[in-house]
Length: 236
Ligand SMILES: Nc1ncnc2c1ncn2[C@@H]1O[C@H](COP(=O)(O)OP(=O)(O)OP(=O)(O)O)[C@@H](O)[C@H]1O
Ligand SMILES: [Mg+2]
Image (cartoon, rainbow, N blue to C red; front, side, top):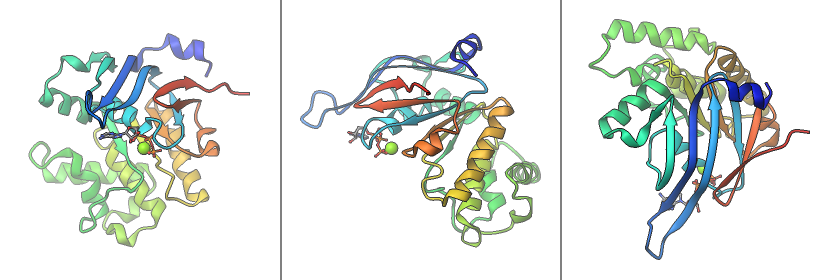
């Protein structure tokens, strides 16, 4: 997909001059993001690379509405997040964004199905429907047979797929993944990347943070962060 074609489709993630300063005005002040302009459309699969401390997770936290910017603006699926209160932000996060983290963050005493059903909330959705939707999400990541297993009874790649199923349970348009293959061997990592490509083809937006250029090469385009600044990487 060329950049011109991508620009013609509506953005689901659009930041303008986004900035983040931690502990402003103190000795501990850190300028973590500087003037970040990022535009990602539905059906895009992009990678973000950059050295440790360059601001990748900071950007992910802002894009995922887990934290607020110090300057600039962010529109998530057309909504200016600065206009939302905490409750509205939580709703936006639930409906629009799925997170996958490096450490899986599965609850060890809960089965795969119950882990996946977590974001549905206990009050909102009846138990039978929660389980049915969780089973469907597990089937979508190729784990239909493993719903009753505890995380400790699953391989690393299977645990990561449970975490991805959990991130997708509310069918959010945006999937944010911070080093999702970092803890996996290369074959299992390839499976996760193939899954991301299927999601992209199903019109999800996938944003993947990685240290690994071979992993980034699977994405449609790559951005590189340096000292809080974001630039698109030229493909040869
Ligand atoms: N909560 C915080 N308070 C103060 N400074 C922070 C906080 N979180 C991150 N930083 C600083 O902001 C900068 C960017 O951090 P960030 O976590 O975004 O880097 P990163 O690119 O994700 O690095 P890594 O590859 O190691 O995960 C770093 O200098 C970090 O020390
Ligand atoms: Mg990080």
